Length: 111
Length: 273
Image (cartoon, rainbow over all chains, first blue to last red; front, side, top):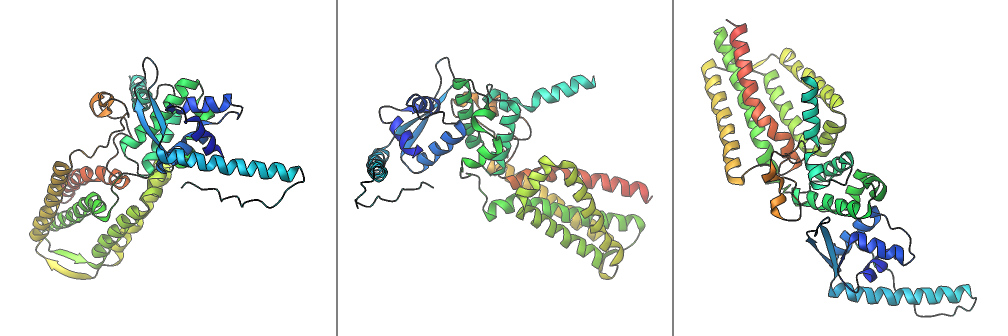
């Protein structure tokens, strides 16, 4: 569910790869390596969930900024709901009180 | 003297990498650029991929190898789709002139040799077979261009050995199959060979004029001012690569075949006087 966390990191404003990695690390997810993050960002961009544009650095390095698209926001909502149901169900199973609930939709895989 | 030349070559080697990505280890950057080129990506795509690595390394202070792992694996993991034209027409444009040049060169040399000896030009089964073998070899290089390029870059000595063995084996039919299929006046061979060679060179020149430079430089995604097309000679072997990986193989042969033809004619002249 790393893509869910990455989409969430972009929910407030457009930002660049290292800032996304820092937000994820600060939120307790741990270090997300560049080798994992950037291929994922490219796949999300290809899927139309985020857009990217290059901005020249002001005294620092130039950066590629990513921004959620309308489709990206919808996908974020869908994944958030799906994840919530999954965690509720898992918690119930672990607590020994699982009952048949709505089937969890299959996770969408981005090409 | 020689050490200064070596130093110059070394300092030129990573020009693109160090200009685009000063915070990335040059060898790591070179591996990434090479992998992306082998995947058929354009200079713009390659420049953008490396710039993002640079951006990350500059911000984080991490080494590229630590943050991104193996450069080649990272390049493949991006799963970028090449913008390079690899259509049949583009392949023909790339490889066609070299093949035609080669046929012209062989006809010219055979005709010239026969003329110097005062003989007729014999088109033997062996000579025809050699032409067919060369066409097959070119087709094989086109078909497996990726593997050939990787071999050329990572195991150049092995590739050189393969080329030598193929060349030696390829000359066997010349000696073994001597049956004469057709016989012409030697002058026809010289004239036809020269015409074919000149025609192929004309094809190359016309293609360069219509499609512009064959160079597809690696460019920064930022201002065009940082384009390596303007900042100087592109560094080998990446910025100098052409529209496609096939062209990379073909573009040097285009210039080499006419030069090689002249050398062979001069040798023939000297040996048959």
